Length: 488
Image (cartoon, rainbow, N blue to C red):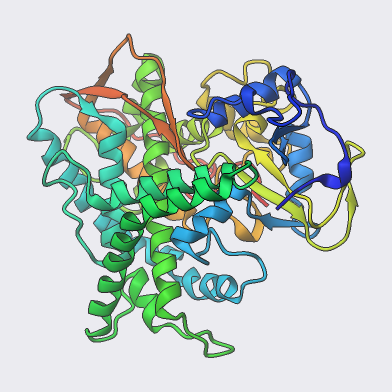
């Protein structure tokens, strides 16, 4: 994890100190913003930030990022903060090392859980959970806290689809205790990752672990109880947990053990609901700030769903919300809710296009908010929210691997179809049913854990009467669940 790159030097923030390195150039509450700021001011495709004696190397240029997304030469590696998250989620799909056998076994066994047939089973669960959110909103007075309520929605949807479990998220305004435990784990991982190279860091890490142990014990007991209860019931493969409990590898006959099943459940609950709720919140933020785009989105929802504000889309209709899909894509371009991933050579030492030599023990973090803003790919207006960037005629010929909100290659997010389908369905129904108005004085404030989402963002929801419109014509554009820019 020392990541010294053989002593090679990269561009770095000014003002480096001998012991602290570049620590003073980092806002501890907003480290991602600090890195994006450094990428902008340094203007290099690759740069470094030194924290004590730990070198963090970031890739900010889209062309270099595309090079590192070659899955034959490079593979996933775990940066310190993700490595630290293993204390919470073990060898789950997100936190497993490439060489760990449970990753390949779990990946092979869980692929049936995200086929088209499986998605058709999840669709009515998503609809019912969204109805529960609408009923919850009807009981509230005043604006709604978007990130809080999108988090309730996505946690509940995942719990019901993956575990056949209801967490009672809509019974009050407070989040489920799992959310507090999850946030504590994410923040602990972030802090542990940054402290491992600090003088006296081991003592601080022990204190963090001790403070977090109550949260860890809570989530472990919660999930272990869910697994034990299902073990006592007749076998079933109707949900994700059932598949993990019963599936055997077709070639080897291997099964997942209960500890790894717990790790996979925690991975799906944490990574799955947190990233999706952030994506929905960012999309709603940008639509609330662009009335002309909001009107287009509502017109599309009305055209597909018709004059009844309570209408629900069929599974097949979700693919017809093409403009909404582009709005989601554009929000994830600007603020990918999983904002980076680590890459390292698989075995041999390689020379990068920048001339730097990268050994298998060296790693770099692909800094997605910078890569997604590279003007060489996205234009001089790359900071602007423009969903039409994802129209097929504009996306055609764009640099492959320039857009990676779900990761890359074999280690890309296995649940991305679930997240995309749920997100588009939610946006369509919400905008068909309500007019949304944000506080004009609100400035986007982003809370950073290992994921990101807006903080303090509220919307006033007003019941609306959909406008009857002719259904949009069918055209051979990108179907839901497939990104118009290559992911590898």
